[in-house]
Length: 156
Image (cartoon, rainbow, N blue to C red; front, top):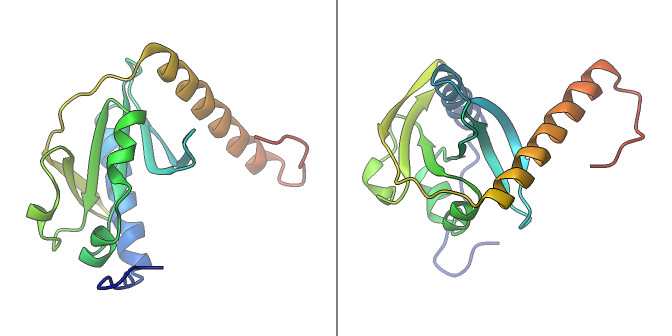
């Protein structure tokens, strides 16, 4: 629930889905594989969790509106779980609201563009290994559930 002076973000599911799809396409075109809604050890969920061929970890936070951005105070927490952090927004989003610490992606349902690169903040080796294992297990389990949706024997 928002505090005093804060508004409830307007639900813009079609915009959110479009920005997410376009940002995922951009990440894949740049050589990364993506997993959506990746749970992180601190209880947060990365909208987009991407891994490139070298093992570099990128988190992309998707924001569909100014209100959605203004009520989000958790985005700095993502720096602990990735080498690169981006915010993906629609083309009509006021880009100057996104802090310089974050990379910036503008996207729609058809694709996206990197407008600003973030500073690289390398994740430690032990944390990287744990995140890679968690991501691989999540992706494998999601694939297995598509192939056998009636099986409910494995708890992640």
